[in-house]
Length: 326
Image 1 (tube, rainbow, N blue to C red):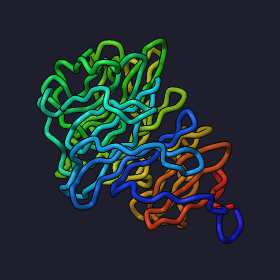
Image 2 (spheres, rainbow, N blue to C red; image 1 turned 120 degrees about the vertical axis):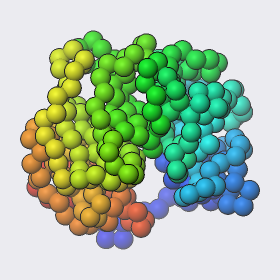
Image 3 (tube, helix red, strand yellow; image 1 turned 90 degrees about the vertical axis):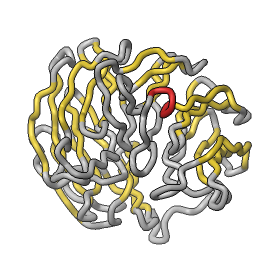
Image 4 (tube, rainbow, N blue to C red; image 1 turned 90 degrees about the horizontal axis):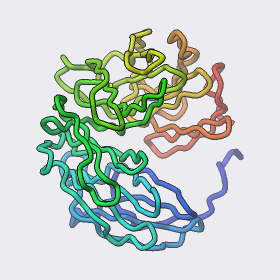
C-alpha cells in the first residue's frame, strides 16, 4: 500500500450505530446499524459502487450496555438472516429487504440476554439456521430456514449464550456445530442437536465474556477468552467424538475481533494490544508485536487485513517471522 493508504473509492452514510461487520453476496453489500435516538434496527443493502439498494427497519435494537447492533447478516439462497440484541431472529428478502419471517428466540426458548445483549452471527447449514438462545434444553437450536419452525434443540444442555458465533466442523464423517456458550466449549451433532462433547471453559470466572469464535483446521480447535489467562488448543479424534487438550497459551487472550487459522499458524490481537502469531502444533509464540492496538482480523490471498479499534487498517503479510505491514 502507498504511505497514505489505498485510494478511497466511496463512502456511505446513515447505516446507524453498532458493532456489525458486512456481508457481500451476489453483487450486494449488507450490514446492520441502530438509529441513535429511536433505537430501531436498520438493515441496509448497497451495490458494489456504494449506491443504496434499499434500507429497512427490522425492529427494536439494543439500547442497554454498549448500545447498537451486534450481528453481521448471513446471506443464503436469496434471504438474509440476522439476530437483534434483544433476541429477535429476522429473515428478510435479499432483493427487497422485505420481511419473510421472524421469531423471538429468547421468549420461545426461555433464554435471557447476556449483560450486553445477544451477539451472534447466524450459521446456515443446508436447510437450517442455527442460533444460541441459551434456554432450558435449548442452549443451541436449529430452525427451518424457510419457515422458522424448530428442527432440534440441545435437550439436556441448558446454558446462557455468550457473544459468540457458531462454526461448522466436519471430522470423520461427523458434522459438528462448535461454539462457546457462557461456560463451555461444545461440539453438537449438526443433524440432531445431540451433545457430542463439552469442555468447561471459564466456568469458575466471575465474568464470562466469550466474544471470539473458535478456529479450526485439520483436527485442531483453538478457543480463547480475553477474561482468562489465554487460550486452549484441542485435538479432535479421527471420528470427531472426543477432544483432548494439547496445550494452553497465556499470550493470545483475544477479547474481541476474532482470529484466523492459516497454514498451521493462528493470528489475532491480545488484551495487551499486541498482534500475536502462534504455532498451532505446540503453542510456540512466533511473534507478539505492536502495530494497530487491539483489533479485528481477516485473511485473504496470503495477507492479513488488520483493523485496529481506533480506526486504522493495516495490510500484513501472513507468516511466522514478524508483524510487518506492507
